[in-house]
Image (cartoon, helix red, strand yellow):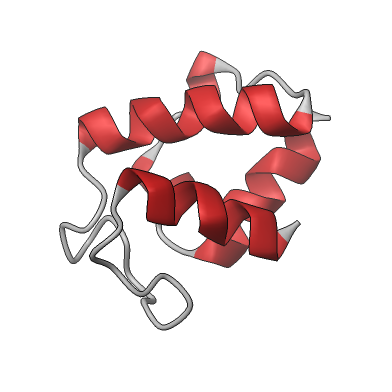
Length: 74
């Protein structure tokens, strides 16, 4: 799952090395439009629905937090 998530992120922001980044929202790597695109891709790829209540910056801060969000949404 982690590798596929990194692929999705790299499609959205190809100039970023997501395997190395630790603070995606705090460092301004993912902006609100990027997060909306990411949610759409995650829902399509993993067959989940991300509830609006879970669209919080802390849920998109790291690869691990995004994976946890996907797991919660199954």
